[in-house]
Length: 415
Image 1 (cartoon, rainbow, N blue to C red):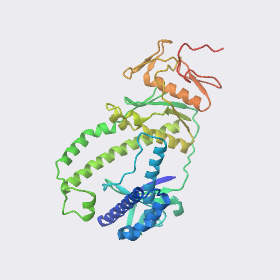
Image 2: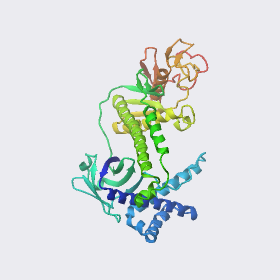
Image 3: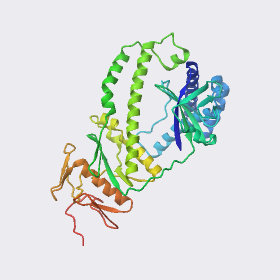
Image 4: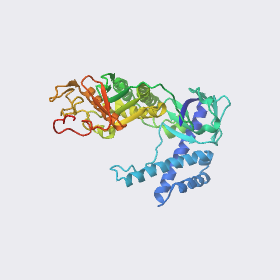
């Protein structure tokens, strides 16, 4: 599946119509959720049938396209099914479905009807009861390469800087690349974004830290504005945003700044992951549980700003696109084990240099962990790799490596 995104260019009146469609989709989702709460044993098909009842009882709900109403019901059911799955797994947080409130962002999803694309794929017209009209698509140039029957859904998304249309295409993305014969292990961190098994490091961009000063300044300006309703605003604006005109403007500036930081973080992760995948035939990385790591109150902001999970997701995505093996390695003992002899060298988090008391091997802590990650990754895909003192990888078959489990004594010599 491919997703193309384009910004919608239109008038303010057209944007108000899109706001009405987004609020209606949110209303249907919340109504389906309430119907599930009040009636025991309601399933997915009952929620879909309930959309027809809502369209008869509420005239504004009838204005929304029928498939868009079904998509809103499917959203409600996805939240319900996720809650059921967590209950079966006996998770600590079940994630009981919640109602969506009126927010400055939201979306409405059309499937195959409710919109019409022009022949040149530069204009989209929404044909449901809200009559939003035609919008100019700005930002996509590849949509005209695909047929209309390949578009499975169109989602209209409202963000702080405008409205966007997302086109989901039923196309499998496969790209060819030349084999490089290289393998790499990655150890992510905070001092450096990652350190690979060759000793190369990538600096941590720290997008949030660099923008924190301006974010605080915009937040202080927002807190000084009035929180009362603005009578001069339109009905749609009063439903979504509360406060004076200055408060709405400053809230939008703060939202735009946060949106810019998130886009910078995503752009960095996408470009770096693509570069790593194209340069190697195998990429090994740690299978970190970031959700538990952010519970550390002293490091939670830095860990969230690094966006390790997003980088891993893009590594796995580009690995499938380019046909590169990506291996998630358990992080246990990757920092403690010596990559030269396999002995366990316990060290605190503040100790940044690995010094093995058994063989005298000295190396940067993250570099040592990256070498261990690569060795485990090679063993996972069917080979065993042993890093020698020079840093080269000796591949062998059918033998146990010292990193298969923590060493409790001296290594036995090979027979």
